[in-house]
Length: 455
Ligand code: SAM
Ligand code: SF4
Image (tube, rainbow, N blue to C red):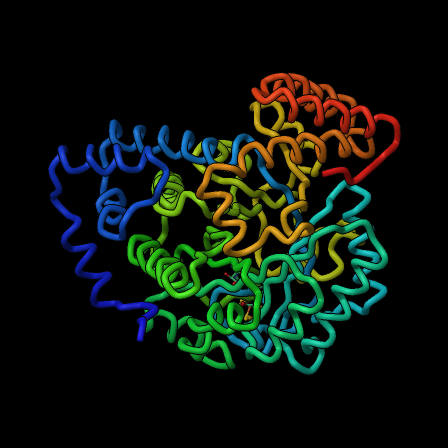
């Protein structure tokens, strides 16, 4: 039977990765350039690289690998918090059950629709629904009803979910509600630390959480999002463990994770952690994101508003492919539009979606609201095959430009429109295949004439 995580092996890999010759590092970097991924041993060696010269090589390769595979598109989304009620006690989280000061709230279905509409007004097309774990006020049927109501009552085109792990039977029900990606972060793969951080509640069961991706896969949900919460334990250990988990999924199901998120611990009102035991500097964080890109080049990397504007801008060049924008981490936060004390944690980038779209366009990337893959059934193994064959880049470019055009026609400010028009002009003209270029031009014109949702 395949083993998901082997702690001893991870420690051995990290130990063996020390004191490596320059020649060996060069060899690994040459391999990384091919965009076919790295072994755990090679990844561990890169994680130990400290000198500026090699770090800047890692950064350059990560940028070019990301662009070879996905092109210049950066997918945008926002989280929508359904409930902050929770029966767990994760020490780092403001939603933990024993935080008596947190005003608790589970949104009613009409409030959820209002949140979705508030986000729609800013131009969002894809959401990540987030929920604390509470089977009484937010059971699976409530989550499913929320999904159905948002699809029926707003222009949201893809709903991803970040919720507590569930059984296979529940995943089968969830799949029927046409979710995009199912996300669940292991937080830390280090069992002892995991136990300390999750003292009570169902989440204290490390193995049940570790096997969540298997149950989702077996239920037919094949776009899966993984992650660790950086800051809980040694980042090198957790990165190798995360990649070991990804390798396991790839071996067993022919399909690795669709996305990897890189949340970093933030201060949270009412959390019970005195200090961050394993703080990660911005430079270490940049390095680990770039290395994840090299290790699993086909996987989307998601960066949230936990990070600062400056760092988010820098990380665009290091392999990140999806960004959340203008996020609230409180149920009802979008309609209320004010800071309150029911946040899960404090965010770090408070820009509006319009500002984020402008800033991405200004740097030459394409802000994308594309939801095409999931809507035409390009998920799981099918999606991975196309990515690995290098075919997604051109599909993504056209669709990203179309959704950007739609966005500026319907939502953007004058300054953002100017910047985005530049990108659309430049990149639509740089398409080598004449047929694809003609088709894109035709669709861009149809958009100007009032048609929408073309892909
Ligand atoms: N309750 C579910 C769970 O824990 O899996 C899903 C939603 S939880 C609100 C989403 C994620 O938020 C968690 O997996 C955790 O990684 C992250 N998180 C919690 N507290 C955080 C903090 N203080 N800073 C940054 N991220 C945090
Ligand atoms: Fe609950 Fe999730 Fe927060 Fe833990 S991280 S307390 S499970 S909402």
